[in-house]
View 1 (cartoon, rainbow, N blue to C red):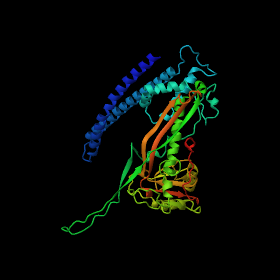
View 2: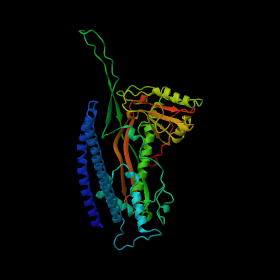
View 3: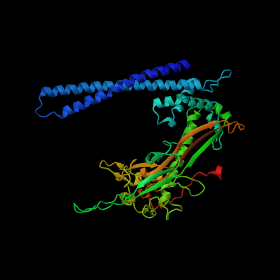
View 4: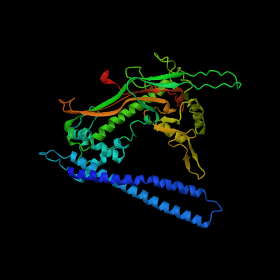
Length: 474
């Protein structure tokens, strides 16, 4: 088994080298293409037919050669991907081989190929979705990862919140139904994220002053500009699963991928909630400052830094309610008018609109029209009509509430991204294995007036949001 894996790695290296050689030729094709485009641009009415025909022949030959080049690259890329998949399956088979002197598990109604396919299917799970085939292979080949997976497969879980754990030990494993949640955090990619250690401070330049007109030989006027800062602390978002080892031994699930993904989703959900509704340092739970929580403030919080930007009351200008009498195009006109309160002077990107599925469906219905063909159509998709900007669906948001703004002006200090670990020592006597995930962040809206909360259908936005209780530290 180990020899086959070694041979597969050798083949992968050979194919990758051949692929690299082909990719080096991309520059030559780019150069030729640029020269042909230049020649085509120089063609005029005075250009002879012979020259035109010769140029056509060169273009045709170039297209054929480039297509053959791209086909060869695609073919080699597929070969590499197939070999890496085969290698991953081979390593998985080695990891699940029973120790010497033990009996292999019974088939229980399925055959070995079906069980292997199920393991491979689960291995290629969303936790690795953002990795290429090469990155996944390198990840799986790491010694610490292989040791981690080997321990997970030989140990299992009994967790407080995991019910019906026996369902993970079916006669024939057909897969597992999961919530359709994309990625770990939907808002992380829109925010400005900086990795820091120790104390952190973001410097914010004040408004650019206007230069002053005067006579050519007159004395210059001094301009004034100020700087402010935005300080960040450190808060942790985390959780763990504890699972009985006896159940883990019989589970057909790829528990490494399943549990890592479940914890990652949980942390991502808590992070998105904090970005929108975080309470900062108030209360018993510490977390980043949320956008809505900042917008509804009616006075500067105690201890507001003197070096920070001047605190501005936004609870009237940037928190709006649109009456339920506004429907159809009138509703979108009101959204457009009210969104003018968002100031993007410090932003270079576009707006992001956050809402839940119910709110998005309501807007889709309001945007419906009958087109020229007599069919029902809507201008509402994954972009906000007319105003533009991505729509992010976050189910924890209240119905009929939209939180929008230039999210690049939300500063997220990442002291430590998501980390996963497991230990069989912490609950050794209970015969349980514990898996945990942690991440450490702080942050808040640096330019608060770049955001707003809009309530449609007569709803008034507020900062009420339920977070999971910190029972372990109460």
